[in-house]
Length: 114
Image (cartoon, rainbow, N blue to C red; front, side, top):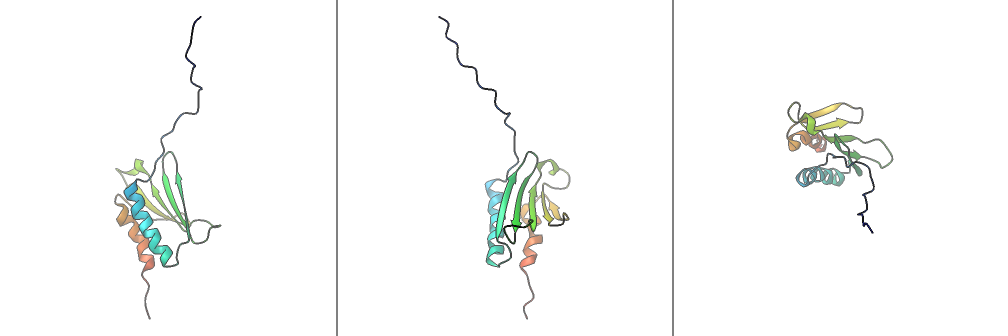
């Protein structure tokens, strides 16, 4: 009698996905917490795809995101891997330093006091 080991079932190929690391998420969630406390933002969603990681922020749950914070590692050497994209698709800020890119959203918290 011949004993054969089972052949592994051919499953879907494991694809690498782009994701935010712990430090990046700490920076993003710090900004998110300040904006929630100010009443500007209410919900968020994260998407991790093959070439981009996206953190979307919403004012209300059932609408389009106000802003998308994107990480595209392929752009690291050229324009910078981080970008803040507005609801209408405009890129508000792009760069290599996440904190510097997110400052464009921090300015939304600054209001004139009468």
